[in-house]
Amino acid sequence: MSKSFLQNGIFQPFKQDEHHVNPEATGTGLGLLIVKKLVELMGGSIQVESELGTGTRFTLHLDFERVNHEEILEHVKTRSEQKGSVVEKIKGKHILLAEDHPANAEIARRLLEKAGCQVEWVKNGTACIDVYRKAKAYAFDVILMDIRMPGIDGLTAAKEIRRMSKEDAQIIPIIAVTANAYEEDVQKALDAGMNGHLAKPIDPQNMYETIARVIENV
Image (tube, rainbow, N blue to C red):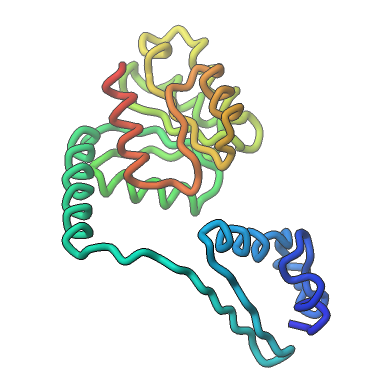
């Protein structure tokens, strides 16, 4: 990176080094700022050294409390038992996954199949509505609905499903999956008739627990 960028722009919002701007792979100029803020929130610091055309070195200083080894083992054991219990609850469940991004869909599908679920993937809200409408009542146990999709978005798709006359249309659990995790976003999902909310990137255990919870509440 250039010296001018190191001195005046590297940790500033929406700043990028003009020497390295690739029009085919540009970002927002927020990544390093976010990293710095996160490090500082943990009471640490970050330094950077760079020479144009040679390379860059980032140095992080973080002070963590050493945890007793037995406590770590006990925590791992507890989490493993919890995961096993909740996975058993969702094993064999049929999931309709509405997600327009192939990589996100593949991650979610693999995590769900690892837990023993059956997954049917659709790429947008329109396809989700169509697949659900044509399926027999109770064919799906849960719908995982991405909110931001081209065409019909997740909120609109959920409302459309709730308006259907199918036997399970009012009770099938619909879980919002979105990068927007503010309180107002959660409320919009609930107002659209959804039963839960998962923030991206997906945490596997949280997803399993959320699915188990909404199924139990049907």
